[in-house]
Image (cartoon, rainbow, N blue to C red; front, side, top):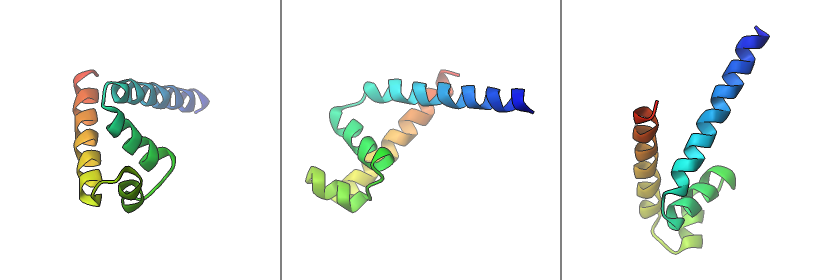
Length: 77
């Protein structure tokens, strides 16, 4: 059981590392949005206010970028 948990942990951190590498290739704006949303746990309206954009724009950028990351991760398996 312990071996299984260690493998899952390694796989998790490999995935995190891949996502971070892919995000580095994105624009600064996308990186900021992801940082504020996932690390700082701000809500979409708060991010929109900070970055001076419409909440729907933030939402769209999150949606599109998540889809892009998913496709890239799937392609690079």
